[in-house]
Image (cartoon, rainbow, N blue to C red; front, side, top):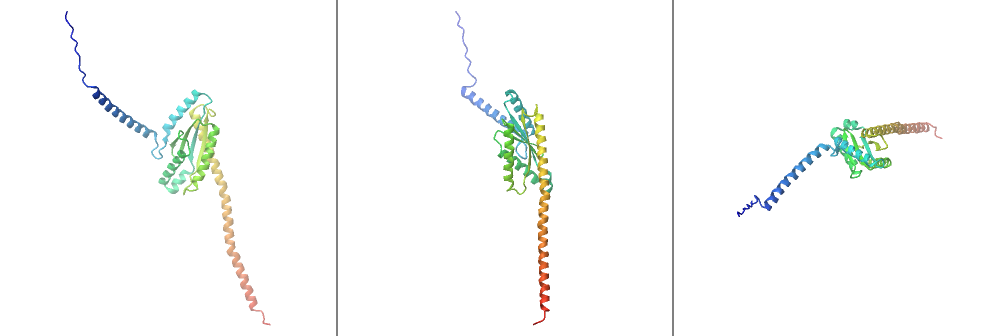
Length: 245
């Protein structure tokens, strides 16, 4: 009976060599993933403020909207639309480099006074948008009030005070789409801007009136002093012509 010979093939590389090769491949893949993440971050970041840009905000808003729809009407989320007041005037009076610093400061202010998982973005120009997951209409209103108070305190130490107009919208209380939410918040922002402008204009005449009164009082003082001096001089001349008894 003829025996069958079994030919055993020697592995082309031992186990240690395979592990080393796979480790090198893994390191290359990690570097590639890191490089792609950097490119992704660059595509979604605003280069001036470092905030997320409009593209990222729209994607995150769409994700949050879909998640909330699946969760039902009990789940809430809100958006803010924020605009810098009189930004063109800042650029015209102080120059665009100062305007850029104001934009960066406004972005930093939002990041500092929002939660870590909120999504503040620069949506374009002097306008910002913020996604607020799990925030109801009442919570959004309290947040806006707190932001106004903190902004007022911050402006006391600034050479150029920064005014912000803010509008809010909450799902599902407003509209049936992402576009409806943004449109509602945008309308509220412009209404807030109008109210602030009216309030500022109402204080201008009063300040002018107070200034006019102060200037009038200042101008009347020398006149009173001059009249008093004239009366004293006339009295002295009259006494000097009286006969000596």
